[in-house]
Structure formats: C-alpha cells, structure tokens
Image (cartoon, rainbow, N blue to C red):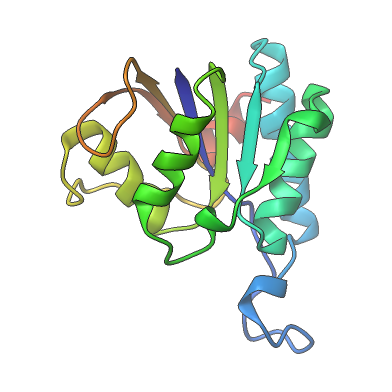
Length: 166
C-alpha cells in the first residue's frame, strides 16, 4: 500500500468572527489555491487514489474534495470520524486494514495527529521530530499495515515545494 498523508490547507483563523466551532473553519481562498496547485502536481505525476479518507472538519473535507475533483476520483472520497483531531490512531489503522484492497490511499487530517501517525508507522514510536505544515504531503510505503513500525518514508513535500514546482 502507498499511504499518502496530507494536512489540510490554510484555513480561516480561529479568531475570525462567525466560526464558533473549530470544526466549522473553512479553507481560505489562498488555502484553496494552494490545494489546487498540489492536486494539479499530483495529476501531472499521474498519482491517483483508490480511497481518500478525510476528517469531517470542514477545512479537511474541502481539501480532500479539491484533490478528488482535480484527480477525477470523487467516488473514492469518504469521511472518517477517526481522522478528527484527538482521535486514537489505532482507529484509522483499523479502518485502513478493513479496506485492504485499496493500494493508493490518501488521508487528509490535522496536526499533531498526522505526524504522530507517521512517526508510529515509520519508527514504532510517537516521538519522531516531524511537523506537517498546512498543505504538506507525505508518502509512506507499507507492505503489511499495523499499529507500529511497518512503513518506509518515501518522501515529504513541504507546501513551499509544491508552490515552487507549479
């Protein structure tokens, strides 16, 4: 399995009036633009997904929808409450294991959960010094998924790299 991990794009700040709940904060126009740029780069590289799982929070869902639309895979998109902030990581791993036929999977979620997931899958421990900036994308190669060391880090694209490669 190739597991791609994407942090949601730039979102409206918490201090902006009108968004009482954190889960309701949408992408900014800049966040949408940068997400489209990332999706266009993935399309040029002929990356596609059998399954796209996204946090139910609006900013993550919008990020996943943009990627799915530009890659022509809207039917691959599913909401996963297990990707909401603060959820136990073993829940998303269990969900992925049930979908064992998916070879190319994209997870869209939040920090620090995504970095912790990457750390556990790559090293077996949660302490890897890794931070996904908003809009960053990571690729892991996994032969047998489990909670613990099972993945090889293939690459990590910071958002600035995606902007530079447009």
